[in-house]
Amino acid sequence: MKINPYAYTLCAAAFLGLPLASVSIHAADEDQIPASALRKYDANKDGALDQAEKAAWLADREKQQAAREARRAEDLARYDTDKDGKLEKDERAVMNADDEKARAEKKAAREAKQAEKAAAIEAKKLAKYDRDQDGKLNEDELAAMQVDEEKHRAAAEKRKATMEAKKQARETKQGEADTNNP
Image (cartoon, rainbow, N blue to C red; front, side):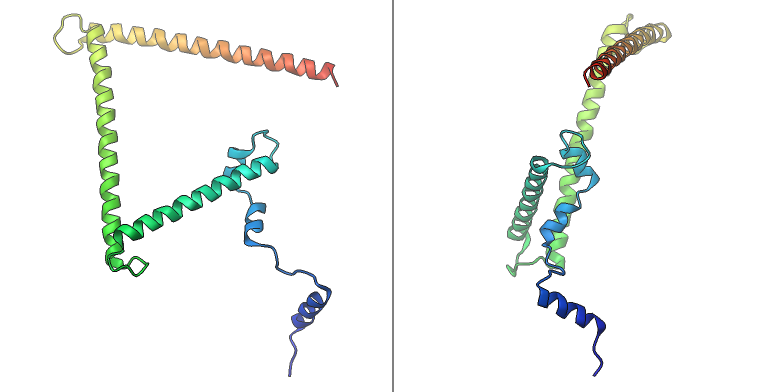
């Protein structure tokens, strides 16, 4: 009989009471914090999650898992026609068709809202710039609109530059205060 060399290691570990793979799956997951979670939950921006931040992350993960389980239970209650506790191919097809219909309805509603918003913007432009009230903008009216838009764009750039200058001044002042108070 040939003895596996790993058997000695396993026996020694068992004899000495050393855990080889007793890390729980939950603990292993906690150690591997995804970058997206770090960006979202690292409130103090130190590059790591402290206990409170990690607790918030884990609580959100548990909420998301509970929501997934609730959705699965709802799907089973709604689509499991033979009540066997799982969705067969035909039941899943009905569920997918309903999901596709819901997505299409949401997309149509979103597009209708965007079209409504675009129409409102166009109506505002016509009300403001259509001097001859013919329902469309001629070259002179378009030119007037473009001049106004350029003025607005320039004013926005000026505000942005002012805000950036104020931010830099604050940072410089903070940096000087930090160097003076070691």
